[in-house]
Length: 512
Ligand code: ADP
Ligand code: ZN
Image (cartoon, rainbow, N blue to C red; front, side, top):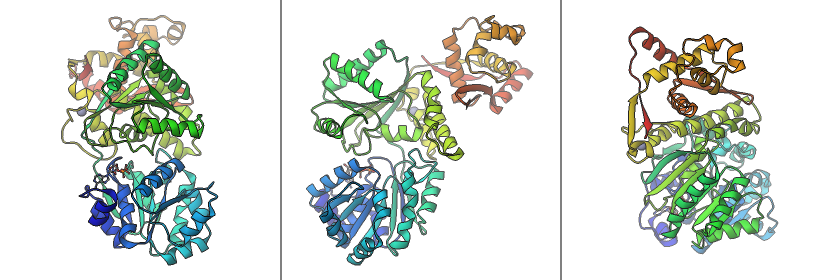
C-alpha cells in the first residue's frame, strides 16, 4: 500500500481513514465512506487495483469529472479509462473487458446497460472493487438525486463477491441509511470523517443585489486577485453570472466565466485557465463543480442563497484543500428565500418535495443565524462541537448584545393576534401603526400593539423576524408561492412566560 502511495501518487503517508478503508476493501468488505470534500476519498479506490492488479470499477455521475480523473491518473502511470453513454470507442470497451485497466470509470447509465457478458469477462479477469462515487445521488433525501443511481443494486447480482464502496462528502443520517439499503451493502464498514474544515472561515452578508453591491464584491475580489489569490464566485442564475463577470472585466480584473449554456469547448478552456492561474477569479453557476481539483482556492463567494445546506457545504468546501486558511462568504438577500417553489418544481413526489424544502429552509436558517455558523453547519450533519468555533463572522464580530425581549414580545404577540395567516410584512405594518385597507378590514388597527413599534424601521423589524425564525421562535411555512409566519411552540412558551412575570430577558445578538 505504501509503495503504491509513494510510487504512483508521490505521497509518503496516508491521511486519516485511508489506510483503514483500503485494508477493509482488500479484505473484501463493503464500505460506506462519508468524508469531507478534499479529504482524499479517491485514493481509497485507486490504490486497491494497484496492489491487487485487478480492475477497480468506479461509477461516477459526471463525464467531465471522469475525464479529469482519467487524465490525471494516466499522468501518474495508472492505467485508466472511462466509459460514458456517448463513448463509441470500442477498443476501450474491449480492453476494459479484458481487465487491461487499473481504474475503469463509467457513468451509472453505462454501468447498468453493459451486457452481462462484459461483466462476466471482466470478473474473470479480476475486479477488486466497485466504487460508487457521489453516492448521495442515490437518495431522494440527498440534494442531488439521480434516478439511474437507484438501479445500481442490479450490479450486486452480477458481481458476486466484489466489495462495494460507496463514497460521498455529504450525507445526513437518513441519506446514509438510504445509500446502504439501496446498494444492498452487506455489513458495511462505515467511516464518517469529521465534517469540520478548521481552516475555513464562514461568513454571511445580507445585501440587496444592486450595482453598489456588485461594486463591493468587485473591490473584495480585486484585492485578492492582486495578491495572487484565487476566488470562485458562485451565482444562482446565468444572468447574474454574466453581470458579475462583466463588472469584474470592466474593473480590469481578468476573470473566467462558467455556466451550463456555454459550449463544452469554452467551458473547458475557462476551467483550464483557472486551474493554471491564468485567471484568478472564476464566476460560475454550480455547474462549475465536482471536478475542480485546485488545492489553493482561497475564497468562495456565494452570490445568493444556495438551494440547500448540503450543496452549500460542498461548494464552499472547494477552497482551502491545501489546508491553508481560506474564507467562505455567502451574500444573500431576503428575496432569495422565495425561490423554494422554483426548486421544488423538479420534485417528482411528496418525499422529494419535502426533502428539497427542508434543506432549503436549513440554508435559509444558516443565513439568518446569529450564533456560531460552523456549529450549526456541523450539527446539520450530525456532529456536535463542544464550543463555538471562533472562526466565523458570528464568533468574531463585535457584538451588540442586548435584551430584545420587549421587541420580541411585541412581534410575536402581533403575529399571534393576526392569526399566523400572513408573512412578516403585515404584522410589521400593524406594529408601525399602518391603517392600510387590509389592516382596517381585519380590525388589526384595534389591536393593543397597533402602532407600538413605530420606533424601529420596517427593515429593523424584518431583521428581528429573521433572527426569530433562525432561532425557532417563529416558524415560516411555504404554501404555493406564499410564505406564512406563525409563532412556534418555543415562541408560545416565551410569550406565556413573559405574560406571568415582567418578562424573562431574551438576549439576542445583533451584529453591530
Ligand atoms: P475528495 O475526493 O475526498 O474530495 P480527493 O481524493 O480529490 O478528495 O483528494 C484531495 C486532494 O488531496 C488531492 O489533491 C489528492 O491528491 C490529495 N491527497 C489525497 N491523499 C493524500 C495523501 N495521503 N497525502 C497527501 N495528499 C493527498
Ligand atoms: Zn463560529
